[in-house]
Image 1: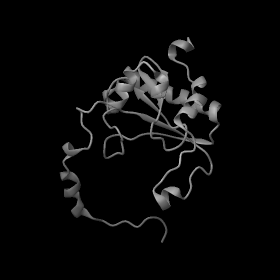
Image 2: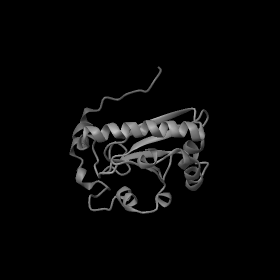
Image 3: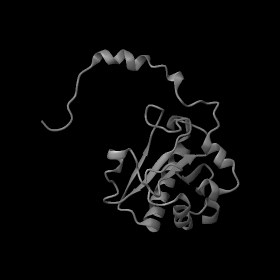
Length: 175
């Protein structure tokens, strides 16, 4: 047999539906780390690479791989439908800008781009939507995550910020 085996388990439906979503580990009363960083005056300290009128592009402080970026709306919104069509379009344009900047600066072989929406969807900070942009290289995976539940990242945030920042300009600087 090939592929994954599946077990039909309809008795689990009530369990899944009855989980109290109010017990999430995330609270609206908790200060959003992104919003705090956006208000700061030192972009290098917060690893912010680019600001536009409606978005911010920054390094992920807990990267899956060196060069892992995030494109976020300036507004504290956790769902795509909460953003205007214009802001959603700008986010995609900024993702495209980030892809081109990463190609020029660190020459990856490919990319993973995506959203983790909601706590159950894997969102580390589900109350503030963020699009992940991950550069990938052939052979960038290894046995460490499987054997020791550890993912090595081979560069510091400071060094990757220094390498990337010349390729990211603010919207104002680009004019």
